[in-house]
Image (cartoon, rainbow, N blue to C red; front, side, top):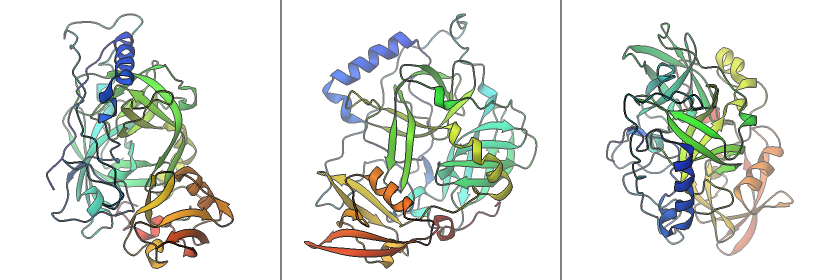
Length: 400
């Protein structure tokens, strides 16, 4: 697999009027669907000949790989970078009504991690990963969690160029957040957590990734659910336009300079009312507020863990198809395989990923037996799956 790294976003700071024009153009052009959904991370490297896994979001490859078996996979749309907008002059000052795009440069850091040898997520995310983190305190950094899965080496690079060793303080699959603990005090400024519930459609926001000369202005185009194929669901994710390419762990800032989201991925359906509009998905920070103390003290949220099956699903012609099954997972042990169609959980019929996850999770904590109605080889059968805690399946980072 070719080496991938997080690059600067192709869209510099610009006014909200230009963004609105771009949004209208993207909705009306036939090429608006050219941004395929990219599962969530930039991996610095991945082993040659690695096979896909279902336990984590996959690292994007140079060529879009089908998420479904070859006989069922739709043709992948080519990925095309957004066009550049004219850059503002370097000496131009922010207007009284605009936030300063350079104000928060020292609040973000680069997170570099290396996964344990033989880790369960190496095939899908790569052995080495890189993204952005946001400083919350003298030794605390918030980032997107997939950068930290099974990571036993963590390095923090500050805006000033300092390289500071770190460790994984905590990870939460339910929200998607991860927290890094720095071994030495950080030299950047801390960001205050804002109220992500107040972020509304058509609101102007800023995003900032490590290594960028200034923040980029975006528009919130929707607050809608997001269901990921890796057994992940957000009820009110934040979707923004135009798309940026330095999204992995990037900060999303409200106009008053508070942190309201952490960058997760790029999508091809950011808007809720206009299909084919590309953009980015950010995880709302209100999801981390009630569990931050737990992540720092225990490495995970308190309370029972969600049941985990170990499979990836895709919606195909209105059916929920199994796309991948993790080796050694509960799903594999129960005999599920790619190409199976899941039609129900217990007595409940399901039609999409969100319904599927909600039914599985309401069945009980990790360890609960979930009975799936599955169409296999033309026959409908009941498949009992002994669920487990996903954290028990993964290799625990040395920092936790």
